[in-house]
Length: 285
Image (cartoon, rainbow, N blue to C red):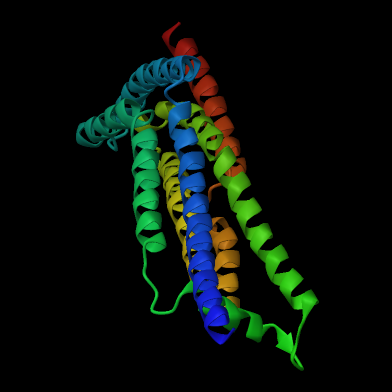
């Protein structure tokens, strides 16, 4: 009987070890697939048409910005403050921006998704000295009070794990659409960049970087928390919950991933473009 119990316990430890590894690997592959859906979104024909439209729209605004920038340089030159060199540098900045604002975000996002998949695969491939079955017993001991398992604490851990996984899931689900909106909004800055007003465009670049950084960090930290959970239950749970705070922390350092501020500044840029175009037309007429 003792031999049977010993063999059964060893087999169960191996089975639990295999099942937990498969679950974590599945979640990592699932989040990689969700992020890849955002990349594949830009391969759809209608999405390519939308990005092409905004690319042409950005080039049109860039052309208008070149004309307006030349008029502004001429006006300032009459007052002794104009600089042909600064105007030429602004033109080069505008040309680089309008050439890359529909290409770089997609490629950067694809790179971050690829890195996240590689890091996640390496994390799920970590070998532990103790099997997951043994560490599961240790985990059970941490939620035990007076020799009896505390169902409330166990339920709390399960709910917190589900909360972290679901929140990261929905964040990954909408990230491709947010990136498409960012590209559409970025076209409105092509009027201001060749004129030397690049503050709004720099903020747009920070938001694109924030989206890509969040796509990499959220899933990677969540996978790391899942791998740490069997050995250090509360520490792994905290790491999983911290993955949901990545967008907020990135926003504190200027890498805001929301579109609210960007939309308001781009609308202001569009209004400035319309008003400046009217002024130039009246001056020419």
